[in-house]
Each structure stands twice: as structure tokens, then as C-alpha cells.
Length: 228
Image (cartoon, rainbow, N blue to C red; front, side, top):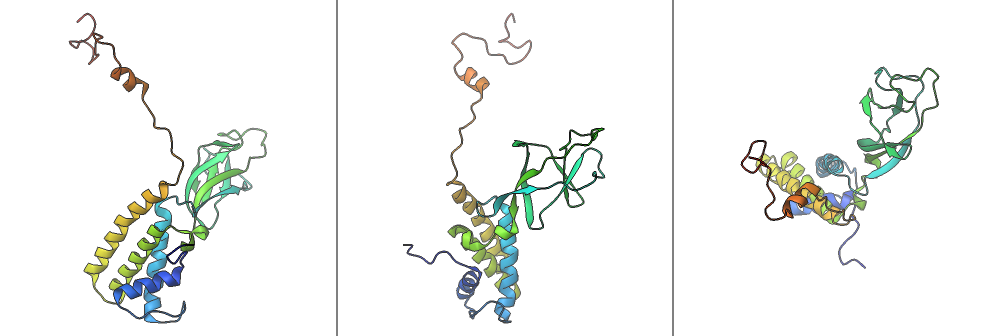
């Protein structure tokens, strides 16, 4: 069993920030108090910033998109797909179990799903596509890591000093501290991901293991060029 309060929610983070700044706590959300009216927007904007800042496990998801009727205005693409309303950031797009090229226009995802461009003379049924993205509906802080929660608390504290205490200097200082800790949160989060094999350049390896006496090519006509 955890020895610290976990997981935590918006009200708890807001009250934790208020306790650190020496202000009155709120008993329930949306109570109409100055404290809540100051802290809630600061929390929401901070959460949005943190959400888009990194592909956290709890904010990313795969979604299947179905094609729209008609052809896109941009003739370089043959099929348009509607973007989910809760989409914050697209990470990758896949079609037929493989990556594909894409673009955006008028709030739509554009893909060549019928063999375009140009569209085939006999239109075919475009394939559905899968997108991996960051979604706002997945951003509840109860799923975040402890370091991200500290970042959110600092963003709320920054809002308190800016909105309630009118101390812009301290508000900016807390914002910078939160921004710096966000980098630490990213690193800690990514420690849990599977380790990837380090890319080793064959050319660099060949240079490292060059046999004694073999020429080092520094350029055409250089002193080490064969026949120089």
C-alpha cells in the first residue's frame, strides 16, 4: 500500500497549492470563491500545457477514422478524414498497418487512401486510417505521475501569485520552476519505456577498426589519398 496520498485529483492539487501559498482552502469544486476562480483556470491551462508537452502514456491513444464523402480541395490528396474533437496533437498516422504520409486542411486529415494523386479513374473505397495522438479526454491528472502532479501544483501556485497576490515576479519564478521540472517529469516517465537498441554507424565502426597502415581519406588530393 502506498505511503503517500495517491492518486490525486484537481481539488487536492488546488488545495495543496493554496496551502503552500498560505491561502484559504476550498471545500468543494466550483464553490464560487476567489481561490477557486483563480486556481481552476491556472490548473486547466497548466494541464493543457503539460498534456501537449509530451506523449505521456495516459494521454495517448489510437483512434480509427472513417473517410469523408467527396474529394479534398487540395488535389494532392484523394481522401479526407474528420479529426476527433478531443484531439490535441497527432503523433503518427497508419494505413494498412503501415505508416503513411498525411497533411491537414480545414480541420481534416488528408491521406492518399485510393492510390492518389490524382484520384483513380474508377474510385475505390478508401481505407480507414488509424491515428496515434494526444487526447484531452485522457488528460485527467489522476493518471499522471507524481512529478507531473508537482508540476501542476507549481503552475497553480504561479496563478495564485499572479491573480490573487499580484506578485508577477514570483509568479514568473514559479512558472520557470514548473517548466524546468517538466523536463525532469518527461525523463522519469520515459524511464519506464522499453529500451531501444542504440544505432551504430557501420562507417564509424569501420573507421574505429581500421587496420594499421591503411590510408585515411581526408579528401580528394589529400596527403593520405592513395597515389598522392
